[in-house]
Image (cartoon, rainbow, N blue to C red; front, top):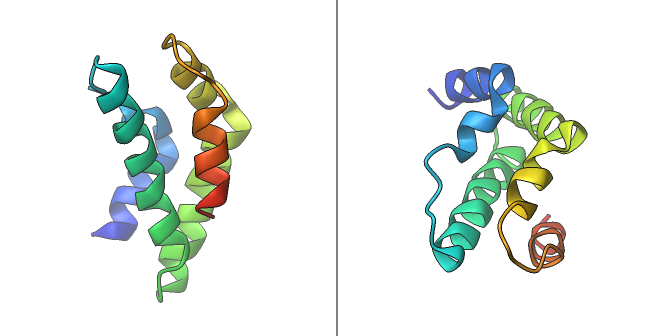
Length: 88
């Protein structure tokens, strides 16, 4: 099931951030929790899950729109990348 979910996210990665809360604090938590899920998949025992999670993560980071989506809120844009990279 995890692999199929990741396969879907590989095709449509920004669906991971649909229906994000409007409140800035809740939005930040939502954003970071979604990336934390991907990080957990990157260290999974199943190699297929690790590879697919890596592909999804690379797509999100390469695309750059995930950061634009995050920065569209009136917030400190450096807060997210610092916390994200610290958790990898």
